[in-house]
Amino acid sequence: MARIAVIGAGMGAMAAAARLATAGHRVTVYERGATYGGSVGRRTRDGFAFDTGPGLLHLPAVWRDVFVKTGKEPLERCVTLTQVDPASRHLFADGTSVLLPNASRAGVVAALDAALGAGAGERWGEFLGRARQTWERVRRPLLEEPLPADPAAPASEDPYPAPRRGLLRRRAATLAEVGGRELRDPRLAALLDAYAAAYGLVPHTAPAAAAVLPYMEQTFGSWYVAGGTRALAEALYERCLARRVEFAFGAGVVATDVAGGRACGLVLADGTTVPADTVVSGAPLPVLSREGALPGREAGGWPRCQSQVRTGRVTVLLALRGERAPDAVHRTVVHGPDGPGEWSALAAGRLPERPTVTVLRPDDPLVRPDGAHEALTLTATVPAEPASGAWTAGTGGEFADRMVEAARAAVPDLPDRVLWREVRTPEDTRADTGSAVVPPPALPGVSGALLPAANSAPVEGLYAVGGWAHPGGGLAHAGMSGALVAGLVVEGAGFRGSR
Image 1 (tube, helix red, strand yellow):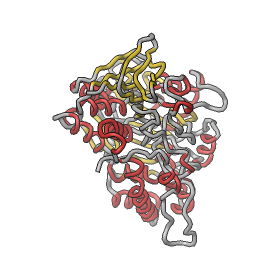
Image 2: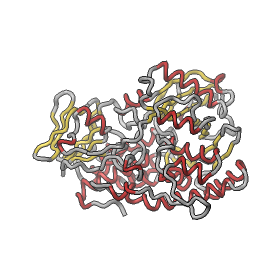
Image 3: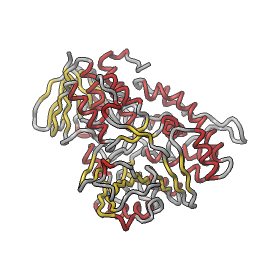
Image 4: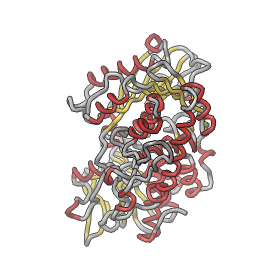
């Protein structure tokens, strides 16, 4: 039975902790904050409840596996999952609207043909076919297997294939190029771009392999957790407690002890030394490395973290008077009028004048005081650290005004219904998680710029889990990360992932 110290109580860290405790190890989680869940937070006030992180669940099979492997109660006995159908509504700048069904490729093709004109659905369907080929090539090496110390193979080439017909058969270099060359409709291109931006990627610099992101959602579906995604974090925390994982909150880590080339414990902010046989870090690696809490490169620490993207999110929590409209859609994406300009601004660290905004309107009595009110959340992808200066209450409030104005396309009477609102900027994300940046998922191409740190450090006994480690950011990826780290700790360097 090994003593395992886990830094941080995020979703990936708790997934690893539960698995390691189930394997018979003594696991203690040291969290600098007052609660668990990392970016999967909750804000409650006056009977309203809001997710402050992801509002929908994709690839629920990942979390079903966590709960099956760590106890007798499956996921569906711990939380209530509902498929969101339609999966999303998209409102384009020209006034066009389309409802996309959940997990139905044929249904999506038909919906796009009906809304955007004959041929639009066919082009999207052909794109999804190429995205499927990409998914089949990257699924194991970039999601289900540990990242090798030399990731040259998965990073060397973007596996997104070239179209087999048409005058231009060369392979697209970026996701934006896929939209322009292959989809040939600015609305379809905007649809594709929005999937990338939702994961914190800039379409003009994201590799074409980012096509796997809409493929995953449209193939495996979108799910809502009753009470909000925070309920999943609560269930995972309870599973950890049931497996006898111990938690120490308010326990910041300032250093990792290394002796004889092996991690051997932690030093807490109050000076306490914690001995451990193994250390698992679920906190942002760039922050911990900068603060000296993890071994640096000179000590054999992680040589690489994602370097291309530094985006965050502005979230506006809106408490509304008046009941939810019977025909309201759970998720609506209101596309900005100038997609290319918006993404260019994002890449340059500037705030767009008219942002693309996602509107979440869950039909859930658990998140509102009664049927005469509604809880609504707006999100937009923004620079984590704007070129104009740090985020302030004034900057966040002014940008939130733009978001509310854009959201009127989805909820016309929105301004008149607001009881109160709260604005969360990347600085709030920093306060919750340690970093203002929302890490994207691992993707091949772009010289490995979107490959996160490997789960195993060159320092023996030291591992990384969560969004800043392989396979990168995203709720499903966090669960996969926990499985990879647990496998490496239990089975050693010979672990090759789940089959």
